[in-house]
Amino acid sequence: MRTESSAGARTRTSVPVVLETFTFLERNTTRDVALAWKDSLESLARFEILECSVADVRKAWAYFRRKDLHKLSAVDATSFVLMTKAKIRTVFAFDHHFATAGFRIVG
Image (cartoon, rainbow, N blue to C red):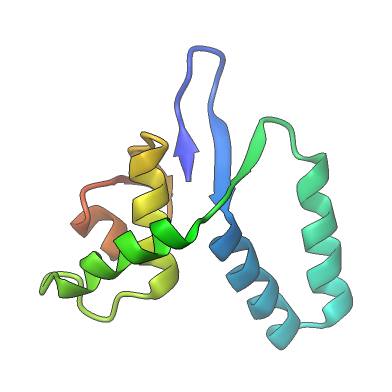
């Protein structure tokens, strides 16, 4: 997730995306690689991890009712909710679901 500002772009992600990425790295490389990636997040400038509440997860379920979002992941649906709440319109992603949900993809 990314937002534009007059001072430059701010990079944002969310707790669900961090957990998903950590799990991917641990399963496909080693735990040490996953931990090093997680630790590296703290050194990034202009970087924020958005929190995810139970209310956000509840709102995310509505995206699964949309027929145009076939094979949507729960992490993506939650990301849509968090991005909408944070007024994020532009996303660095490779997943077509973000465009289908109305976000502008860069990347």
